[in-house]
Amino acid sequence: MRRHCALSAAAAFAVLAAGCGDSVATGAGPAAPAAPEAPACTLVEDGWGPAGTTPIRVEKVATGLEVAWAMAFLPDGDALVTERPGRIRLLRGGVLEAAPVAIVPVVAEGEGGLLGIAADPRFAENRRFYTYHTADDGGRSVNRVTRWVLAEDRGSARVDRVILDGIPAAGVHDGGRIRFGPDGLLYVGTGDAQEPSRAQDLGSLAGKLLRVTTEGAPGDGNPFPGSPVFLLGIRNTQAFDFLHAGTLVVGDHGPSGDTGRSGHDEVNVARAGDNLGWPDVYSCDTASGITSPAIVWSRAAPPGGGSVYRGDAVPAWKGSFLAGILGARHLHRILLGEDGRVREHEVYLQGDPPAGLGRVRDVQQGPDGAVWVTTSNCDGRGTCPPEKDVVARVVAR
Image (cartoon, rainbow, N blue to C red; front, side):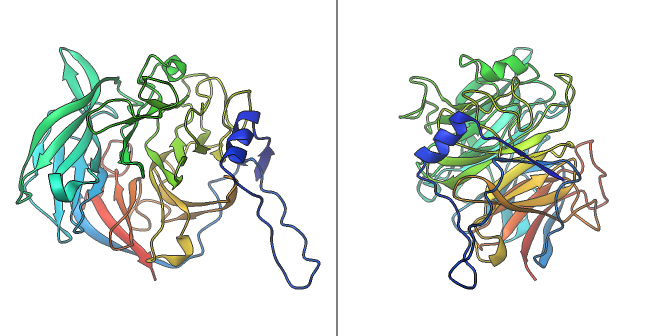
């Protein structure tokens, strides 16, 4: 069952400012009626959504990993993969190298550890990449973003410098996803580190989406002058990508009892300066100045990584936001209209192995146009199979 909720004034303004229009259906005959308007916020109250209808094939590329948290593809198709206990691995020619590229000293407690990774847009020239990890800072845990240089033979890497430090850390809600935007700047997703009020505090790096240069300085044109903050009001984002320049799709984890509420994980369409509402606004509820979600699940999902798919290996998915789902153990496809509202959504690869993939963590489009995913079945919250965590490739069947 889905409930329709009103879009907040702030979100409606953002949609109009983006130049979005209404979608009109065309049918046989000159008097085809306009398609019914999609709800501003789709609330999924029963289950997760309809079963997917596109035939797909899953190829396991690498096994034996431990909490394969993130991938960064290099220009020639090789990929760097992070394992949360602190290992950076290399997929070379589709084969997982036995020896790690680097061992990162991390605080691997709860949801902390080695998390996101992103290759520099100029990697072919400078061999730089970036990681997000939880570190010990004189007895307290912090999250930091570090710049690395990969050796020419790709067998090792060295730390170049820490570009962003002091991001609050905790046993849960550490965020961790990083990716470069079409503007060449680095976007960094953080969590509230178990203090919900931080998400509304512009003086804190927690509970935000940050936008910085490759040196760690606030990006030019950020909505709050002199600040790296790009979006606020986030509980714990691990999934975001650009729907198009200036407009992001952002997954966020709903409350898990910490505010007397539970479930209600969400996916939002947002622009610079938007406030996603945590911890004050819940589910599809609206409030002045708050951007309403595009879709909310009443039961705890929650989203891991996510990407807007633009490839040709699964033509029916082109233009959709694909989200890895952790607790509910599946891959979720969401088709958004030009107005940012959900037109379709469906469930793929449901369940634990071997029927499904289990806890899907990262979702990326590879240089080959396929959908690449990683799993986190060995993170203490899933069923860790004999093959441990995997990197898999998804194509049309």
